[in-house]
Length: 440
Image (cartoon, rainbow, N blue to C red):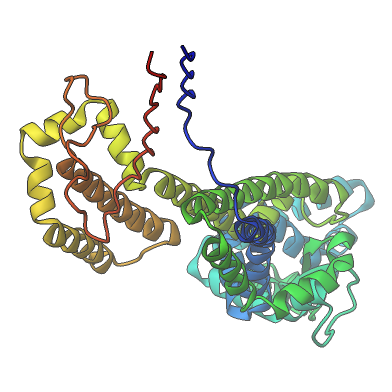
């Protein structure tokens, strides 16, 4: 008798090795997405330099809120009064008219006149007239701003590493008001340009960074498109495109988070290193925060865009949504209520309706930020993914054991899905093992 031949154990076939072409595409996609993520902070700074610094109107709009910052206006008022009274030598003239033993009275009278001057300056600073003065003063100083940040433009004043704003017009206006109030000692005083000035920005570090700022200004119009193009190319090249969208979104958000930390460090460095004696600490903080306020806004917007894109790409996968639905027994509800069958029968209309609603929301909004646009489009993509998941559930056979686990199709193949709803690839069946024995 011949011994029975032991059957070979049934083992699933080994997965085929990953083609070298796919590995190459994955490497290229990762390189592209890393470079694009690194370019995101540079794109933010380039846009800020071009729109808020080099552009005259952009700069004027950027510093406009400083006209309502009390720390800044107090510094301007003190400087104007100081210039007027030093030019007129008010205290010397008052004390010269009095005997020596009444010099303290002369100083008291001078202090009283200074208080009147401070009130006049305060009235002007609180009026809409000062906003116009502030705008024109900063418009005149914009040439110095461009020179400090980029090293370009005609130098109208030699101020080294500083941006100086001239308030001579404000000083002369205050002088005229005081003369009308009876302070005739100021009648012949004239404040020439370049005397009643405030150093608004001063930093050697900015001057040293001029070549970098100038380069970013040159590429500011193309750099964002290059960055976006690299992200898109990474997704197109990658063999796993949805995963690459997730990677790109996370990379963008992480680089922006690092950039925000860098901004905080740069702020402390600037406030410590600046040698600006015209502004006290609160005023210097107000100037820095106002001048750079767009940078954190842009960064947070990109953080939101990256996170939304990553989440949408992760959760909008129809196969993943279908598995999640089955995990929470949602497939039973979708079948028992007829929702899955109805969505399957009307899937084209439902998809058109979802896209139309998203378009309507965008159309009725007066202004739409980048983050709002991404959120609206993200919700639309997730909704389309849910529709595809319901179509998958409708075309699967219900579970036979009532456990709600992944469905096993009855028969050979489930109903064919359309091209837009690819079914999950079924696991290859293990080959049957035939036990062969010799006849006795």
